[in-house]
Length: 322
Image 1 (cartoon, helix red, strand yellow):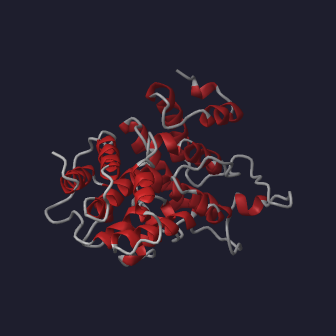
Image 2 (cartoon, one colour):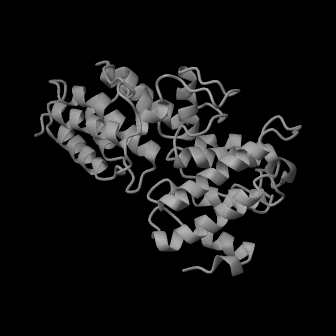
Image 3 (cartoon, helix red, strand yellow):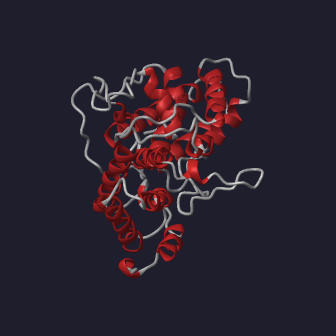
């Protein structure tokens, strides 16, 4: 176990870089808890950017299978930092975190966010420490990390799905509406095989929603090769084993309606990144100015394990698998 209290910030930063989704809890949780506790003790302080950087760096682990105490501590600290920093005076018209939204195709940020040192090289080799360490930028990264760990748990994230996501939405829309402009065999087979080994909650939910949106086409006479539904069955069954055992917190009728494949097709990719989810939330009229006001249909129901188990069963049934 790492003796975190006696490590320098440089040593901690090096340790954070080695934490990923596959890290064991006994190695990762002490680092997460140390970082979260330091941030929570002074969420608007002069070193908040350092501890936000640590939790962003470890968000791949936190979005997979963290210890419950570590997950809760990280989320509480990130929410506190976002609240303490977001409305500080700022003269910038944009911030570095906004420019990185398109890089979050699979949710986990693997690059240098610049928060630790206040330096982030631009294409011409310059740095802009003021914008990097701006409290609004630090708050932005805190919100992104919180939303990766617990989708739809924060607001005020810039809306906009990565270009890749919109491209796939268009491609799959052609398939589910039965006017494909790409080879459905290749597209559906590739889609069935695209789930990472340790997906975030958003990516896992999006995958299962997409499989449901397209299963009707795969089971139809439009697909003659049995290898396509077989690949989808294999993918769905593997995905189900990755769902968490978190209990359902939703009331009767709060799980989403799944009767429209084209809508599901869009949702399937809009669940897969913070900017995508923010775009999806705009469809439901989320009010960024009032974060305490929630709609009748809770958007986090889309990532509910109970809902996704039922959706997977429906998908397998449509693919005529017992």
